[in-house]
Structures are given as structure tokens and as C-alpha cells.
Image (cartoon, rainbow, N blue to C red; front, side, top):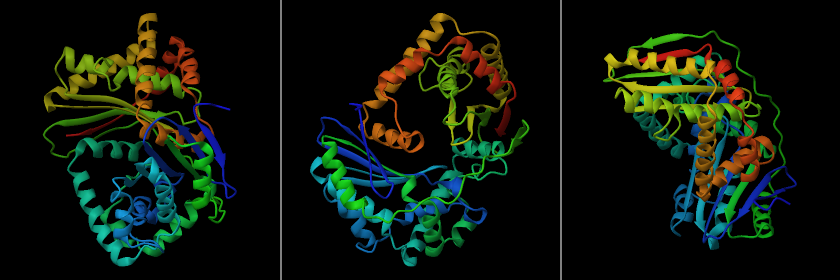
Length: 406
């Protein structure tokens, strides 16, 4: 048995994964394989609205009781939505773990979605939408994915539009939940100083009696698109720009070489290639980064920067030059070794965050039905070659698209 984590399965199809660590704090989450890409054309924003609505009362509790159940004991209950999943998670003292599991089960399966509470929550989300619109650095990523996944539900942003929100009600949410929140698409993930037997018993007590349900639809992969260059006048103080392309899906073998390449190019460290070129050497941009987002059947790479308007063209020229070098010239032995060491160290440090580990393990188990140990990740990373990275660079960056806010 893998000693880093333990797995189990309930009779209704809900899977579980647990890691035991020495801590007085427990983190747990129900990860549901349902997000905004599972919305119908008239349901934009419904997955996110559902995530908000589940806290607004259940058959056992009123909204304020949901909010106070763990918080009164110093714990926390929260949730978030992505394009492919919805996660309800809690942090508590070890002694309150069973209370967290019971509460997550209650809001996930017994929410009533009362209209008077939904109306208040619409106003909250409208405020969230307005805040989002005030941040072009956030908006441009959604605009880019809307273009690069044109015609697909992967494109539209998670929040939806105000007009969409006005249409959604309790019946809309119930239909969406029934269609997408099925037990065969759920993982309960946990971490803390509890035995796997104890965890499995508690999770089985509160989730094991839920009716078995299975997904009846298959996600449609986005159609191919031609590269584009688009400028949108936003009258912003700076130019915001994304250069990117479609990329590999979450199960692709080339996902790891691409992850190393993107981290080398524009990862979070100050020594990333683009940060050195654009900021340290030339003083052109305060903020530059490269991101790779893999989805179930496709992915996207986005290189983002912001700069003064008169520096934007120079930034793009420098980025194009760096991409050309990566496509035509192999990383040196020293560069490759440093890239691997940095990637592995970042991952090891992130695993020290127990909540982050728990959420990542739940998502990985949901998608891959397993997770790699640190030893397995090390072997895979060390096996990546400079030729593989150059091959990936050629495939991903030979035909890029560009979106500019100015």
C-alpha cells in the first residue's frame, strides 16, 4: 500500500483519499467533477451560482446555521468553482473533523435553494462581477480563453453575465445539480492526524447513504481554431497582453515537459526567463508570467505581461525572440538541471501546505484515479530531456495567438 496516501470507495461510487500527517488541524473537501464547461448555452454562470447557493439553507439548517456551524468553533467552510470542477472544503481542529464532514454532506446533498436567499446572493455575485470588471489583468485571461476556445463552453468566464444571473432560480440549480453532481464524479479528500479507518468510517456515515447516481453525458471537445491577433480598446492606463496557444490535455504525456518549459519561461520565481529579460534587464514590465492550464481534453498556454503603452511592442519583440530561441536551441545541461531542481523544489515546498496538498490530491484522484508520490514525480521530472522540451516548444509556440487590451 502507498504510504503517502490511502484510498477507499463508498458503495455509491464516491471515492475517498486520505493522507495522515502529524497536525492538530484537519482539512477536507468534496471535489465534484462539474464546472462551467458543463453548463448549457442558457446556463452561463449557473455552476458558480450553485456554489454560492448551497450555503443558503438545507433541509436541516438555515443559512446562518450553515455559516456558523464550523466558524463558531474556529473552523472554516468555503467553496470555489472552476471550468471543470466545484469544490466544497473545510478546515477544523482534529476533534471537529466529523462535524466538517457532516456539514459538507449536508450542503452538497440537502440544500433547498430558497428564493429569498438566492435573490440576496445574486446581488453578492453582481458585486463580484463588478469587481472583476475593474481588473483588466484578470479579465484578459478570460477573454483570451473565450477566443482560443471559441464555440466551446470552456470559453466563457466562470461568473457569467448579470443578464444570465437574473434567469437562474432554485429550479435551474436543482436541474443542474441533478445532471452534473453525480456520485460517480465525486472525491472526498482529507488530510490530518486521523487513521484511514476512522476517516473512512466518518465519511461513510455521512456520505455513504447518498443515492447512487451516474453521469449521463460526455463533454464535447472544443473545435480547432485559426491563430488570431486581436486588439480591444479598454482605455486602460497600461497595455495588457497575452500571447499563447492551445496546449495538451491533463492526461497527455507531454504535459510534464510543457510544465517545465512554462515554469522556466515565466514561472513564479524571479529568475524566470521572461522576468529577467523584460524586467531585470530592460525595466519594461513589472508583471510578466506564463501559465499552463490543462483541461480534460485540451489545454491552454498564456504568456501575460503589462507595460506602459509605448513599451508594449518592445516587450512583444523580446517575447517572440525568447520563444524562437526555445524552439530552435536546446536548453544547456546546466539550464535543464536547474529547471528541474527548481520545479521539484517548488512542488516539495507547496506540499508542505497541507490544505493545498489535500485539494490537489482530490483533484488528481478525481481525474487520474491515482496521484503520484514525490518519488514518482522526481523520477518523471528527471527523465525529461532537452530534446523533449524543444519539441514541445516547437509544437506549442510555432503558431501563437495574441490578445491586447489598450
